[in-house]
Image (tube, rainbow, N blue to C red; front, side):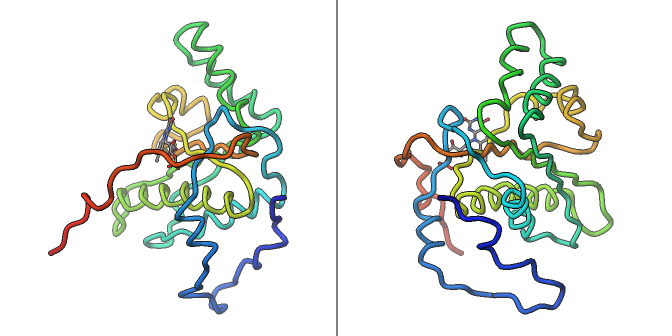
Length: 204
Ligand SMILES: Cc1cc2nc3c(=O)[nH]c(=O)nc-3n(C[C@H](O)[C@H](O)[C@H](O)COP(=O)(O)O)c2cc1C
């Protein structure tokens, strides 16, 4: 049974006490064993209403140089899933790819499109703003998992297609950081082959 928004501490106000550390065996277990859910393995329900808002609230608590909040969320749920798929179909190359596009958001109960709104700034490089948007995607996954929902971070051709981005409502400077599909997993995942982190560590 998923947890709900009521299980999450309220949003702290500025200067309220926070935590620099919070020893948590469960958080470590989540990080050690979490898996994405394949998009073919979602069923209802996904997070909705106040629970989905809670996931977004937690996802937005990422490191953010300059407090710019260089990202935004577009929730694609309910009938909005078909509308968003139709938007992609309208810019698809042919009828076969349009049919596939129509199905894009119907594969999971909810999709959150995370958009990087990075722009040139006097002090904060755009690269750092994009990194913050990427962190939002991962934090969103972790928050969803911790609340009891499966999730998967996908991109695909629309992310790199100017017309598709416009059809989904992006401004010309904005970029899609990810489509985070959320729902109930139909299968228990197993571990996959991973890049060997040991080979990627060096020391000065
Ligand atoms: C930016 C980004 C985009 C991704 N896009 C896709 C994608 O379009 N299709 C896909 O199968 N996996 C994609 N993945 C990989 C999945 O999200 C996921 O990481 C992978 O299936 C293994 O998941 P796990 O290690 O989280 O279990 C993407 C990952 C990232 C970070």
